[in-house]
Length: 329
Ligand code: PBG
Image (tube, rainbow, N blue to C red):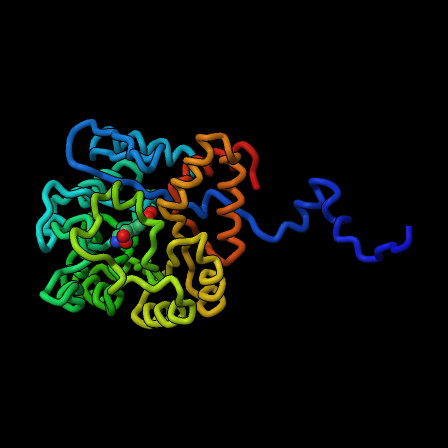
């Protein structure tokens, strides 16, 4: 034996109590947001093939039962997506009083008044062409789309949304929605901006779930180029200035550096979206027995927290809540 180290970080890894004492980051049930997909129909609870364990739910006892299970597990917030009865170029059901998301908001609010209700505000699930806004001959008309997004935000707030989350990546969408909400008296409805949303292949399973693949073209004209980290700071700063209450980075796993840098530049709460493709990959590998699902999921979500996310939207949320209840940390 020749060299005897003086510095020994292993001293603090020796026992579980030591490791717990010096642990820097925690993942808790309060950090989790569960996405839900609501559909028309009766007693529908249909598993989404590309998202095993996630279901299309009708707004009746199917949704009630799901919400009861989430609340019992300690989940405090859900993010709602709706599939309309019919699609059209503007997406009229998106801001209809009896739209599917509006129905779900009223039902959830009655049944679980303390559950935080967050809604996705976008056009792609509702439009016949599948784009996130209103089309003109050259593409998506940014400013015409702002009017629609404002109407959607107001209609969600009126139906009981606590937080509206614009995801269309139109310029000015946060300012437009804030102005529309305030004009309608919804001063207390918060805005969670999908400020930094990349044009990502990791949304694939979601587009099957939401039936929202663009009929022609793609979303690269409005969602961000995955190569750009500096631009993420610009997007985040703009949305903060327009009045966003919380910011989001999406997807999460391939963008942990972006979460980290946005965290350093804003004092707003920051949310990471652990998207559908990230979920589906873990599920597929776990099904084959190639990875330990529980450990991989907890490690991934902890990584998002360590990178700087305060809260995480994840299809794994319910499972994580149950795992944390079995053995916290
Ligand atoms: C709507 C929207 C999308 C997602 C959230 N909101 C799809 C998209 O932008 O194409 C993706 C969520 C996921 O993949 O889990 N614009």
